[in-house]
Structures are given as C-alpha cells and as structure tokens.
Amino acid sequence: MTEKIQGKLVTLRPATMQDRRPIFDWLTNSDLTSSMMGPPIYADGKIPSWEEFKEDYKEYFFDSTQPQLGRCFIIEVNGEPVGQINHDRIYPEDKSTELDIWLKSSMYTGKGYGSDALQTLCAFLNVGYSCNKFIIAPSKRNTRAIKAYKKAGFVESAEPIRSPDYFDTVVLVKTL
Ligand SMILES: CC(C)(COP(=O)(O)OP(=O)(O)OC[C@H]1O[C@@H](n2cnc3c(N)ncnc32)[C@H](O)[C@@H]1OP(=O)(O)O)[C@@H](O)C(=O)NCCC(=O)NCCS
Image 1 (cartoon, rainbow, N blue to C red):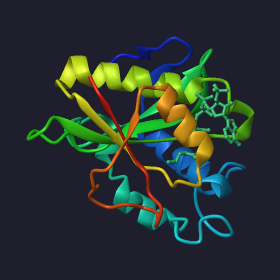
Image 2: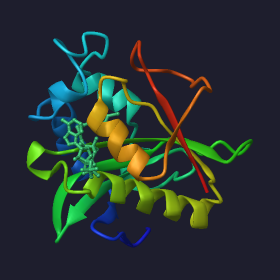
Image 3: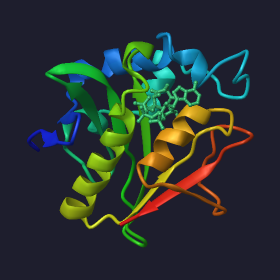
Image 4: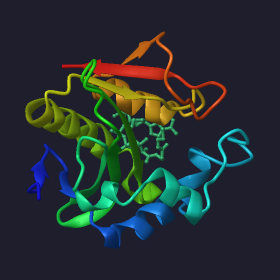
C-alpha cells in the first residue's frame, strides 16, 4: 500500500473501498455537480447512476491492487478530505495516462488545491511508474477547470482522446 503523498498544499491518500460511495456523491450530488455534468449547462454530460459509476470506477480504483490500471486518491487538507483525483490505465506504449479530478464542495474551490493535487499526482506517477504524459479532458465551458489545469502545467493539444465526455472536449497534456 502506497503511503500518503505530500504536495505543497494538499496530501494525497490512496482511496479505499469505504471512499467509493462518498466519491460518487461528490461527483453526482454536490454543489459542484452542475459545474461539470448534467443539464442545463452539460446536457451532453450525463450524470451517472451508482451502477454506471461502479462500472467505470471498478474495485481496483479503490483497493490499490492494480495501480497500472488506475487508482483514486483522496485529496486531503489538514487531514480533512476535500475531493478526489484519479488516474486511469498507464499505457506502456507511450507511458501516458488520463487524469480526472473533482472536489467535494465549492467551499474548497479556488484555493489552489486542484492544481496542487494534479502536480503532486503527476510527479508521483513519473517517479514511481515512469509515466511522462498526462492527459485531462474537460469541457471548453469549464473555464475554472481549464485555468487550474494550465496552472498545473497542462497545455492545450490537438490530439484526439479515446472517449471524450463532451461535444466541446478540450484535450490538455502535461509532459514530464
Ligand atoms: C476543477 C477543479 C478540480 C479545480 O480545482 P481548484 O482547487 O478549484 O483549482 P485552483 O484553485 O487551483 O485554480 C482555479 C482557478 O480558476 C479560477 N476560478 C475560480 N472560479 C472560477 C470561475 N467560475 N471561472 C473561471 N475561473 C475561476 C481561480 O481564481 C483559479 O485561478 P487563479 O489561481 O489564477 O486565481 C475544482 O474547481 C472542481 O472540483 N470543480 C468542479 C468539478 C470539476 O469541474 N471537475 C473537472 C471535471 S473535468
């Protein structure tokens, strides 16, 4: 089991099975949900059901058994959970992986936690798994997310991604 990973502002703790439901609730039923999925802004980004979420975020995201396939981390500040960040499969061909992040409430946005969590996870995956290409793919409408990702060293890229979530998906890439 990986120890906690220390960033500048946040600490990342590998998620456990107990975190699966709260992470789902933060995604689908928080005051931030409407800023990333569901109508009226994101009619194209369907809010998943619990069953659909479990299909996307299989057990290995929460038990650290297959880090090469993906893993969720709880973002903590002073020991308190403020959100989650995850990486998907690490592709051996080009040492790349896709990331996703959401905080648990608007109380915690705009404080630099998101960009610090991204920088911290990228550095960890670079050192531990030789991963050197990180991809994140928000909607163009999500200006706050794009700003946070650029602060964390991501740049817009024209390359296609495997399964875009939005009609106006913007692909951002960070290389280490
Ligand atoms: C996207 C998210 C993870 C970013 O984390 P964060 O901790 O809020 O990000 P940061 O504080 O590092 O940076 C956010 C930047 O956007 C700015 N910002 C805040 N609200 C904004 C808004 N409504 N519109 C545009 N920019 C905004 C902040 O001022 C900050 O920039 P600055 O540091 O130059 O002032 C977080 O906001 C979040 O969970 N949002 C809801 C879920 C989501 O959209 N997830 C992404 C799905 S792809």
